[in-house]
Image (cartoon, rainbow, N blue to C red; front, side, top):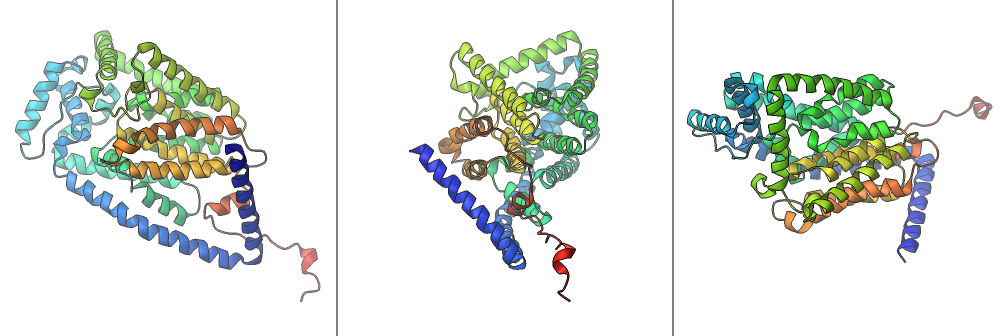
Length: 435
């Protein structure tokens, strides 16, 4: 029954595409105006909620000590004051937190949790330790918004108007608000994914690999991206990333030493074993659905193997699906996740739409967006499991469907994204005798 329904839906979709092509030939100007009007209406509606996100972001900036940015900043202060080899010293961390509370008594309270951030993350915010926390958070927020906008406008398919509409839609879900207002470094990382894709499309594989270096800032949620590109045959991308990351790794080892490195590994293991202390959501964390270590390991291996297989299967079909699979697979195998970490689902969705391999993926991405909107503070209890199912579906669907035949991104496909319509020139032979 489900197969018959899927076949019928596919037939309807093909009919719609055919009708669209016919209308495009008969009434190109009218169809273009209709699309513009539809996009403008969507933009007006989405902007209402997007502006609400920006307003809440501005309100929370009054208490920056309660945000992740201040935890990044505190880790940098700890390394500078106590030595980088004491970056994961809990006594030193408590002293830094207490000093921040005394220095900024009216700017919120820092949430206590043993530091799990990488040394490069702490190094990145060293310049902000020389600024008052309010000024630092303002500059950091500008950088967060700029990199986020770059990622959206680069990866989102369609014309400029369609991209702006998608930017407004992107700002609506609560998980996006959480990531932005907390100052999560994930925004820098999705900008790196966008830069990597752009460089890959232009044939600059080595530079694309170097663009992935920001993954070291928070590797747990993007770990499989370079490996999936390797499975897709992008050896130069992987090699460039590996060499650059290896150099940073040596710098980390020289800075924090063997003891500090071991302490960091133990801290990650501790965070995975104590999810409540880190306020991890059990609904969308795959590993938290298993009570035994064997079960968790099996789930991670299965998700990782499927991710690499998808990358290999699409090795001749462009970088979009391998990148998307790496993003989704990384979430599935991550040792721990917060709701704001699921921000990477959006670039995965845009890349899948760009690949345009099957009509059902359009439906899946649209339904997935609805789930992200419903997964707000109260809705997460009802829709949180849906986020995990969405991750699995975004990985399984391309694996089952396989690469599409023929060129990706043809005229009809681009038109569906709202790209500007261009009339094909009429051959000269057909114009003779008309004057």
